[in-house]
Image (cartoon, rainbow, N blue to C red; front, side, top):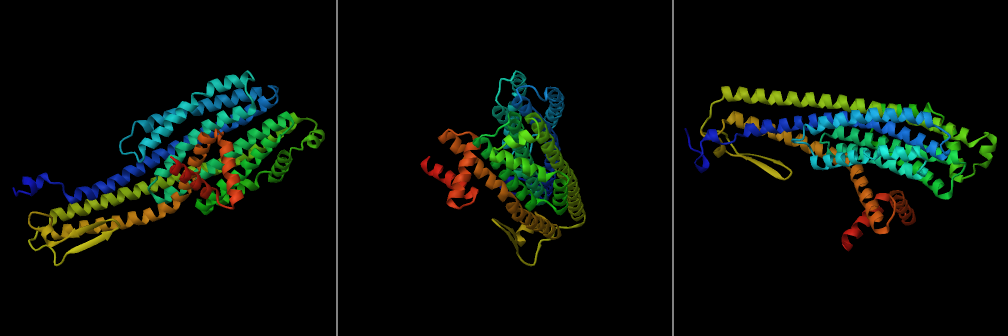
Length: 443
């Protein structure tokens, strides 16, 4: 047995082929985790949809002083509870496979927060049942629950290493975020129409929600494929957008007196608004379901491709190991392959009789080179897909700083950022970066 460096035999030393195969296996592990996360995202989507509908009905109930939607709320709560149990079951599956999870610490922290916030659902419902809650406060509690669930989806998008899957997740997250803002608009409008008035603050909030939806759907359109965009356009066309815009204008101007007189009672208008917006949000859910199906199909496809590449590499290396014979003068010249921050040197001294055969050595270099080029190409595409996610992180951090130092609610912090951006003629994300930079300077 030939002695190697540090007195170890060749059989004790790691072999380059082990790590070529390990690289492929890591890719498979990442894609397997992405598939599980895709399944979790689908479960989260259904739970969010149920909570959004429950939130809207709760605001009709609260806005009408308990006279409307009492029976509907019982059914909606039962539906939410059933989907919450499905969510907890999906979490058990994710928790059982924690090894090698991309960005696992952040992901499980987000999940922990979501589980904790959902524990407040029963006390929230009790207060709504007792009419011991203003509509605005109910919206805030439900929106915090939905926001914590969306944060898990965001983490899945941020951790995706496949550029095509990453683009799809970016499109999906922004579409889900836009749908959530539409859900908040439904709840806010339901309470306002039930009460028969929108004050200036509520009218401004409604305008913010409408603008926020447009921004989210613009990002969705940038990253979604043509079929998903066409489905979204068709979904919008199937709803009564003209009536939605009419009621929006009346709510944003706060002039409901003529509407109430012409349509007999605020209760009827509130029901009309709720059903109108529910049809719109249900159409959004169809697009969301389509995106989830796409995600699962894409994960299956990518996983199969990765497994085929692994099998090809294992077969190629196995064949070379069986047939190749190590030669003393391994290569005619040194081979140097560069990729980003590392260089692979393959000189004749590496292929002595104590090391790899020349044919196997060249095969390994080809595999490493091809893998490196593919990963670099994927990284370039990922950088473009993640820019939208990075911008959201900056905006969220700026909001958190304003909430802490200016003692603002989240909505007020976001409104302040928007106002600063408009006054300065800058993009929202640029103003957010300035806020974050100033906070860093001031400690």
